Image (tube, rainbow, N blue to C red; front, top):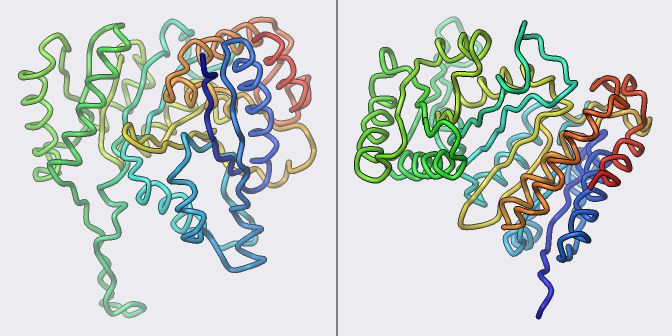
Length: 355
């Protein structure tokens, strides 16, 4: 029998990105050894250092290579000496659009022994998924500026969605809800009382698809402002939330802080039919670079998501269980950089041992 084999691109990126992704690789390798598959890790020099050195952000030749891989594992992008927006648009957004990673998947899960700012809430209360549409909305660049710098300056940025974009995101969200099989409830987060064109499209498509194809999934609708309030007051109400790009960008960061912060939050930019990319939600944290103090658990959780998406669910579940065991042990004292009671590499070793 031929051993399963995956080619995964590694973009360590900037700051502490290479450090956390290296610990993720360590843990993925441990799970691969246990479950019987191999990974070829292909390193890509992309990020602020390359841009400053060469002026290149994402060469077409590299993009063509990335399109041939099974997945991409990203550390972090963001360099203090590069103007904000250059790397984000030229690398992250370009990758998402060129690889058509039309889903941003964000589990919001509170692990044992992790502090949340939500009073009287525990792991049994904070455990839901946000499916964010990742290719349309205000991020498409439709708009412009006229008379810039004058008192009459006009700035326009348009939210744009096609029915095709909405339908494929909704279908993915319904499938996630069905596969998760927890509360079997999918909630659409929108703003139909004000954004009467875009979210009217979302709401009509949501109910049409649900009635015809997913009658077993309960459907709910929440305005985005109400969603934010309930994410704080009653997170236990949620099972799966689906929403557009802009609202998803905002509510997933709110979700991250309720699950303990950026040190534990992971996400995936997913093309279900193509190449997906997985990353810790936190930034590059340049002030901690090279100090071996940054928390790698978000990157490790992202590695588990990556394995689940390529079809290695058993290995993914092993990593998830190892994270729970490691946090339950009490040896990791805090999720903040330099306050964990263990170094970055020690945390990676500890979780790999649990696998």
